[in-house]
Image 1 (cartoon, rainbow, N blue to C red):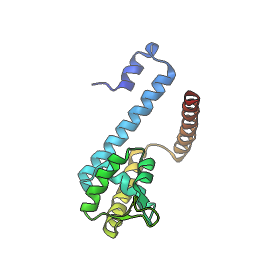
Image 2: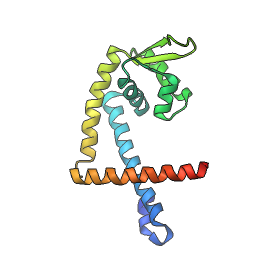
Image 3: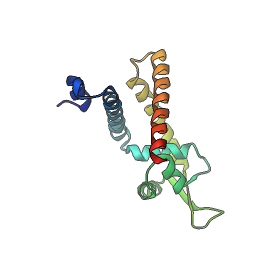
Image 4: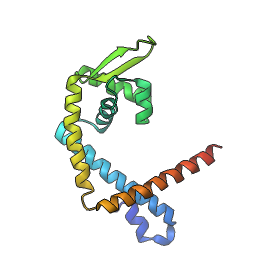
Length: 163
């Protein structure tokens, strides 16, 4: 079965360069994300969203509100609530009421949660290095530069659409 990028390359007259670029980016993202998801599940029996939530909280030792976590993860509060419930039950997260607003819940990693996340994060970092092992440091810098330009272009276009 061919992926959409391969199909686009086989009939280039049917696709603009920008569309082929988008398909290449999407293919790379899907491939890498799928590999990371599989490795997290196989090695740690953890989902990528759970890992991502723990990563956000690892950067905030004093904890974060559910709303802040939702914004950083770019998902709804409802999605975060389910993850939080399971992580509280497993002993990985602590949940408390905010000192300044009784309606707000603040969550943070427990000692167990921080230790387990850091073990996962170390392996995750090695996996990412392995996935990009065939790129030279110069390639990585150039790709980062080009992706920054790509991000800025997409943000500018989105801003024009909203205006």
